[in-house]
Length: 507
Image (cartoon, rainbow, N blue to C red):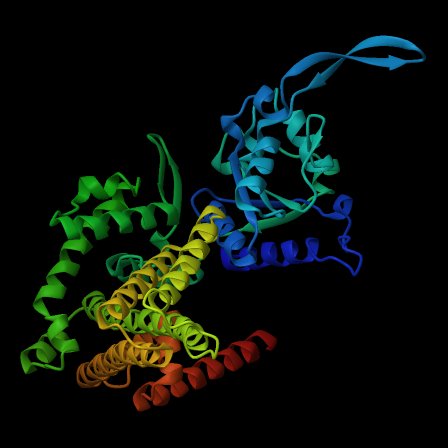
């Protein structure tokens, strides 16, 4: 299966394993909660999806790469203790608690989360001395003499033998005690993730034209040559920062991430062309509503790669603008909730409207937001976007608090009117972002119709919009006649193609 389906399978397993009955007992007893064994080629995102799953399920995550451990750190150190048997004291060997098990308890103490995921990576690449302990871990959910705490689901990941010479095959006894999931690279699924995660548009555009280069693993006389999703994503982040610094990534830089000479060379050359297209076609000018006849003429004679690059540049520009709209919408909603709370306090009959009491209402709200942010951050359940939103909310509440101090409202009702005015400014900003987003989208459709008409380029543009959470959210609340028209045609064509494929399959 692909990584998206694997992620959903893991989420479903966690929800099932952590479901409790009316007496507080797990519906599936711990002994029947099979560890998930995730097998797939290196670099396809096995580790990354665990962070996403933990955040989305609201549980803790303890992650270890087991190849970094010795037998002693994994199962604990032996020590001699004394026990009584039949009235006689005997010296026996016991073990200190495993470093891994200790980490789970430390995570529970730090975050307050009593349930979570223990993720062990490269589990089938352990040393010979550690292999028996790993088999015991999968079969009995223990490290040495110490069991994994109840409520912690085990997920292990490993590479197939063809990718790693040190891989050890699990026996049937072990495999019969795990929930085995095999994952294959899938560019279509990764592309959805890439759009949401703001992967550099040059990477997406290049792979759209050459999807076979998304994942390559070849053995040559000179060793392994490979390009992986991890490599593409890390390269994307570097390109983003290089552009901010005014630096350029050449072939030598690209090779550091894509260790496949042919792919690295082709992408480096494409990157130069991509930058040229962005400049030559004046994408910002197009999104601003200016369409030049010379631009249309040039594009009519362009290669497919060049046309695809221009479409993806337009798409990237639109999505980035719609992300700003979406973020302003979320921020406005969060601020509205705070203003609603402030209003209920300021307009209460028993509210003490003294000089310090009115600004204190905003200070208390700000403290609550900050506390929530810190708690989620410590629990590692906070995304970067959410953290920025909460920090912005704290700054805005502080600004409102200072405004109340400066204007000295005479009572709670007057203070609330000031807050209503300030919040109105934020709503106006959101309305302005919406209007700007609509204009950019309309200008993109103007250009696409003039340049390509009702063609595959329009399908590519629509497909890209439909993969963006921000774009979909915007289009659900904002009318765009051409999006609706072309999208219905796209859905009809897809349905028609699926029916034709099914008929062909049945023949």
